Image (cartoon, rainbow, N blue to C red):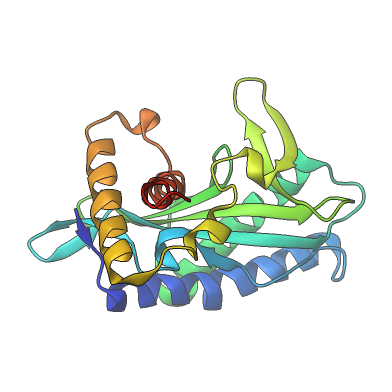
Length: 226
C-alpha cells in the first residue's frame, strides 16, 4: 500500500461535499418538509483529514481507499426513531447517487447500511473499489455528549451510543498530541504496517481504517509515556 497523493483526494471530496450532500438535503427536505431535518455540513475525520490515506497502487493507479465523514444532526422529525433516521438518510443518498449519474455521469454504488456508518462505493473499470465514503450520523444527548447512530447487526437493533464507546472514540483529541516530524513519521510507518497486515485477513474480519488509526495514535503516545 502507498500513501495517496493529496491531489488525488480532491475530486472525491468535491463529489461528496459539493454534489451529493446538497442533493441529500434537498431530498430529505422534500420528504419531511424543510426545517424538520437539520444537520451541519459533514466533517471529514480520520486519515483523510490528516493526509494519511493509504491506497493500493498498481501501475501508477490508486484504488481501495476511503473517506470518513461525520454528519451532526441538529433536528430530526419527532416521529422518527434511530432506525427510521438511518433509513431516511440511506434513501436520500440513493436518490442523490441516481441524480449524480444523470448530472455528471459519475456512477456510485447504492448506499450500504454498515454497523457505525453508511457506506458508498465507487468502482473502477476493473470492478474493484476505487474509493468509498463512510458516513457516520451523530447527535448530542441531553448531557451534551456526542452519540453515534449504530446498527447492532446481530439483533437488528438501531440506537445511539456514546462516541467514546465505539471505534471512533476520542481519536480527535488524542491525535493532536502527536508532535514533531519524528512522531508523525513513526505514526505513518506504523499505520501503514497495520493496514498492510489487515489486507491479509478476510474483508469481514478487517478493522475499520479509523479504528486502526486510533490504535496507532495510542501506541505512539504510549511510547512517550502519555
